[in-house]
Length: 285
Image (cartoon, rainbow, N blue to C red; front, side):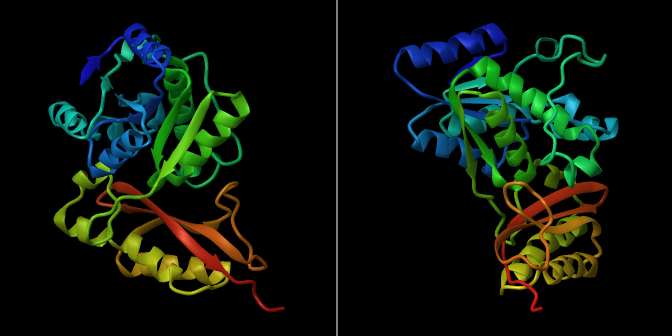
C-alpha cells in the first residue's frame, strides 16, 4: 500500500493510474475505520478500480468544537485496516494543504440547497457546506473516478449526487448498503463514544426502521411508529421522518410507493443517524 500526504503526489498518483489504463476508486473517510469502511474498500476493489482511500477529519463540517475534539482518531489501526482490505493508496492530507487559511474562514464554500437544508442540515448548521466543500476538493484533486459512499449517511449521498450533477464532475457516485452489527446497530465511528447502556439503547434506531418497514402504511403512521419506538427506548429524538429518496422532501399521506425513512437520535450526548426503505399506502379519502 502506498502512503501519501501531499496533494501534488496524490494528484500525480491518480493521473498515473489513468494513463496506465486503470480506473480510480475513491473512498473518502474521516478515519476511525470500521467494517463499514472496509465494505467500501472491498466494493471498489470488486469493481476493478485502483482503490484510493483518504483519511481527513474535516473541521469545516463540525459546528461544535467539542464534537471535533472528541472525534475518534486511530491512525495506526486505520492504516492496518486499509492495508488488510486492499487499499492501493492511502492519502492522509495535511490540514494546512486542505484548508490553508484554517482556522480563519475559507473564502470558497460549496453549498447544495434543497437536499442539504433539512434533517442533518437543520440540526448541524453549516455541516453540509463543509461536507460539500471538502468532497468537491477531494474530487478535484483525485480527478475522474468512481466515488464510494455508505448509505448510512443517506442525506450526505444525496448532497454529493446533486453537487456532482450540478457542477459536472467526471465522477460516478456509488452508494453502498449500510453495514450493521448483529443486533442491527448501523456501524459508525461515533458508536465508540457510547456507554454500554447507551450502546444498548442505540439499537432502537434500527428497531424503529424495522417496525416501520413491516407492512405498508401511510406517511403519518410511519412517522408515529418511528417516534414511538425511539421514545420508548429513552432516545432523544432529533427527527423521525419519511421522505422522497431523491429530493428528501417529506412524504404526504396521499403518496404511495417506496420512500425512505430517516431517523436521528441523541444518546449519551452522541448524535446517531440511520435510515431504511419503507412502503407507503395513500390514506383513503
